Length: 379
Ligand SMILES: *Cc1c(COP(=O)(O)O)cnc(C)c1O
Image 1 (cartoon, rainbow, N blue to C red):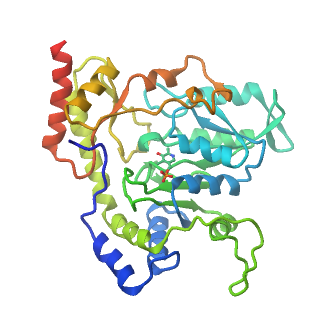
Image 2: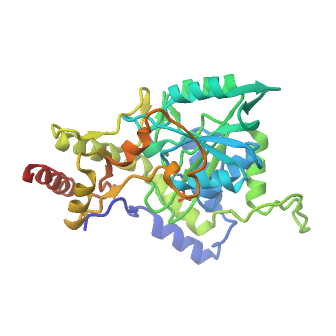
């Protein structure tokens, strides 16, 4: 079987994890946690990086820090992984689902602008949804597959309409817009080091921010909000969301290899595009202008998507469908969904992700693309 996207542990992972075990520094304090945070801060250019248990908890904490409270609304694209919207509900807030663009699969900013202009008004500096009277506190762009929307336009819209930005940049470590790292455009950004992400610690995440108060508060909240070095005095309800040293040790080893991983992801994406060229109706993701994407997970639109998907799986290729759009899930069916043509459904019904681990060989990619060609030519 050719796997979809598996970790690549060819660096110093063993050495650093062994060091944790040898020195007994296995838990939530240790030098690798600090080093991992420094490396992410340095790579992204963020002032603060706070290691955290996973990407989902990074989103939860970031939304809380952005001030999202019960009954607020948060704007989020309708095509995303479930964790983005779940995190909104953890704060007691509800999503406003925004349809996406058919070529980039990112939030449609024309639609967003129309929604903000028609359905909200600025009351004492706050963005209020007119029909419900609820406050829209935050907009959460999701950098789907490492691509980004027009981040300058998004920032202008957020400023004009009184919103702050929390980036779900969990898939976008290694992606840049006009040379600026994903995760550093809003008040807070988030990363995930889940098993299939571009770097992996098995499970893990990071919050990044340039804000001094929020940077310190993020660390405080993720470590049970203990306010005294000696006394067990906690000054608010905190969380046990800290990343442990063993996993951070893996993170340090993975960060050492990130530039190589990004380079390989680019090559994989180019080879797929080259080998799939000329097939009617087959199109890779359209990358945004000024975006240097990390090409995290190679995905394209295909005619007869379901048949091809099963054909590939039956042939030993771990191909995967795209996420079911959020508005089609039972928990979110009743939520506000702003759309004209339900592009989300079209994207869902045409996209397939193909194997693209950094360790995949060119021969394996050619095996996959030959299978795809074979599928269409048999017909
Ligand atoms: C991976 C991912 C997350 C969640 O990260 P975990 O580390 O798995 O909790 C959130 N949003 C998106 C878009 C993701 O791809």
